[in-house]
Length: 549
Image 1 (cartoon, rainbow, N blue to C red):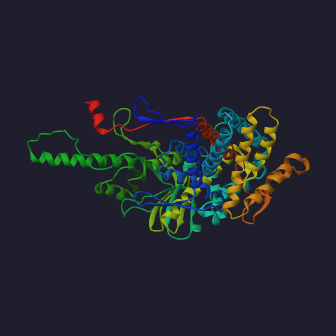
Image 2 (cartoon, one colour):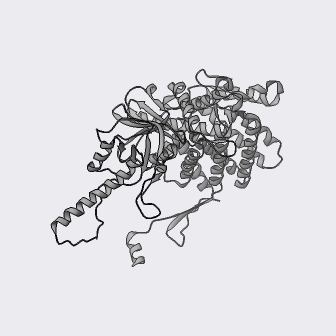
Image 3 (tube, helix red, strand yellow):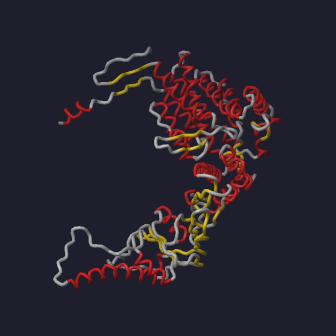
């Protein structure tokens, strides 16, 4: 159908037919072009400056797209796609956008050749299903075969494209230790890895290799008074979600007194109320008190006298994690079921040691080796804040990749090997079908080659030559049983050759590849099915008021 902009019964415009599809494909292509050059170990970084002048330097696809102010509805679908990949897998956010945009471009070419969109997206669905089946049956490697080395290599591959890629050996071991230290049983014989239990703190100064892993929880706070101890062994930890300040009358409460001495008695009682609270907490055996609220200077005196360590203005999220790790209970009030104020020893948590140490310009409190559950913290060092922020994003991506590897217990080979193998397999699969869906499947196979092509281009290599060689290797692996080992071959981007990436240790979570294919296919199908765009114009302010009034 030709382009048509017809006046509707409401204020707005309508565009239908090929024009809408072409606009959507162009918008998706524009988003893909922004992140394309940041893909792979030799990809480039982006510098983004927001409206208040805040600078972000990153090559993480999800972060780049999140900071862009995208208005086009089709482009927004790709931005949401990268956010979804980030939430579900944590890695592969750039490649999922590139594959989706390439699927759209090739799908649009088919539609322009008078193939119905329904045939195209049915073909894409079939191709995606066959691709996932082929990955699971032929391209996955169980991590039991390789052991810890597989985990370190998966973390290293995730970091290779990031700022800390040069120190990937150092950080990959740190991340594997952190991930292993937080595992909890899921009750079905397996383990869960809640990566949020790894607290990542940043302190600029010193070199990146002086970053450290702490077996415990690091808290970006300091003790409330100088007279308090800086180190306690085998402490009893109380986690409180209320303030320890002098009680004040609520607004609207009115007290009439005859004698000025009664006023002094009221003030004394206000001080005594909080004093009694503190005495009950200390009497229970607590000697480390962490609270989300404030603590009065008057109240600090009682903690100093009892030799306890008190920390005020802690983040509630941090206290929740510390309570879980130490076995403490985060209390929002001291009132028990009888309506009386009490503090029982059962609410206290335990750890081997609580110590305040200086890291860079700041002092941090470390809750080391908690008793109930293991916890882990990484303190990152770097030259400036922008560098530390990017390091934190890289560590997060590596932790997410490890979580997926440990929970699914399967990895695939990186360096474009999976995409090349799928491309060859799907081309052969397409010719085995006698329906028109074979065109969609063939385009899906062609679209997957965009990943090895861009990897080679970003590395400054001859993409056409390398991809042709890679396809020849994988064709041989699938047609000749004696060459089956060639299916592990992928790109070596530094030397510009094809190599065995399984031996080289270029590994990625299998879940990452499968989910990125599924998400990219669904996003491309969503946009391909659109053939009508109705855009409402905002009502003038005066007209809206007339309607309301």
